[in-house]
Length: 245
Image 1 (cartoon, rainbow, N blue to C red):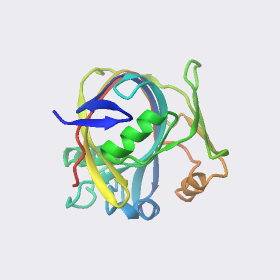
Image 2: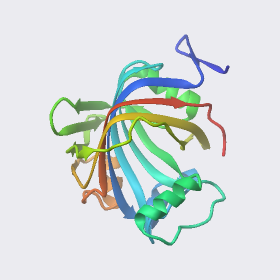
Image 3: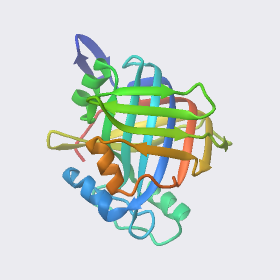
Image 4: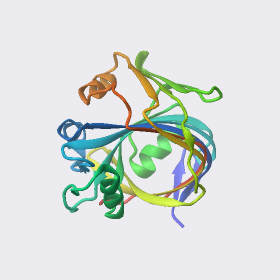
């Protein structure tokens, strides 16, 4: 079993998260703009509709896991696996199903956290682009809210209204996550078992600040109506060893 030494502690693979609450808002954005944002990775966004890519903003409260409790915010894009064909030609739902069946994954473009141990583990084990930031999560209210500041500057204020319960949760799903750090792109096996899932069309309000990441999001067309929002009361996850794709 592979092990990594992080701040004097051994972290065994796969890394297991036993309980995390997650809120996410997914947006349709221009594929050409998304390609420009992640061009450094040598990956290509998956076009879920002609000339449209999928960008997801998420925030999470990690309650129990191998990397200790922490808060996290993330920006990710659905990407085609290296060498895969181009966009399918059906509707949005059929295209998403086909892309996932073909191995489409989530490229993690930015991943601020608020604790040093998970920062070092994420960067050294998987090459995740983790940075320290001030992440104010308000998850005990009917509206789930994340206020994110980096280097003393407002990045965004994201509010999500939970939708209706999604039946059939509790089943494990798996997909690949992709990262890029210091010139190296990596593929990370990622499995999830969600419970207490709610979803709805729309359901998000976003206010951008004056940070450079906020400017990047504005160039993608945000703020705009979310395609879909999802909240997960409890999720278990595992992350395997990173490999170059």
